[in-house]
Image (cartoon, rainbow, N blue to C red; front, top):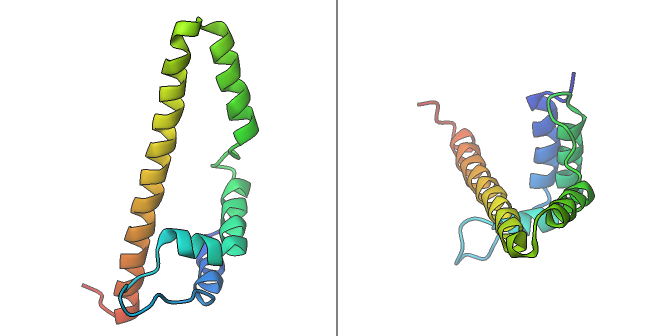
Length: 117
């Protein structure tokens, strides 16, 4: 069995303790700031998730090999279609990550405030 939610939260909290809070003009740190300041914990979280038997590791090199192979199989006219697919998938992953980050921040704030309802 992989890491539990408690295990993942322990890793995440260790990173959260190291965050430099933004200036008074901004209430919350950005995902980019947190990703940069908590790079070690972020990598540890990804590794823990990849070790779980439910999640196969993402292999960026293999993804690039598949894209190149698909381009070889398709004609030159369809290369743009493959690039569009890759770009669209990258945008979708980014949107999912941003949504999860902001939802996580909101849940964390609610827990910190002690509200249960």
